[in-house]
Image 1 (tube, helix red, strand yellow):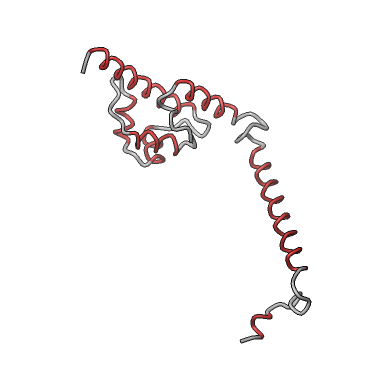
Image 2: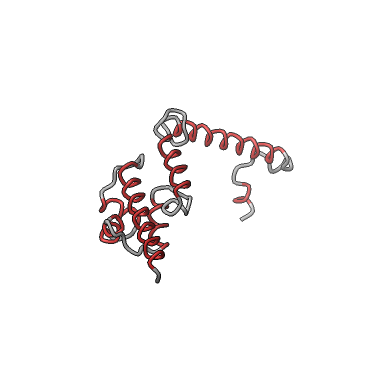
Length: 147
């Protein structure tokens, strides 16, 4: 491989290492130890340690995706693209702010949404019951009577 290609690979490995260290230390659910993140992602601690080293290592795409997905990062280019890295970190940083997605108000909002869904389903079920023929409405266990 030519010298320029080697340098490009070295820079890419260094950037992946920097991003990995950053997310491990600054993730809203962290900071994570190498062992903690390795367990969470289902990869070896040694692999992550080598990935964060000065020279980096040849990580597989599978490893990068396991790590990012274990942290709730669905943007596959997180470790490879600076713009995606910055966008996702901005979103993760906002999670700690009240009213932000994933922030303190998020569990209440999710619970409220679930209750709304349950009520809507109950209303649909009630309407479906109204459409049943009169002899079947309100007869618990009518299936048992046929046996």
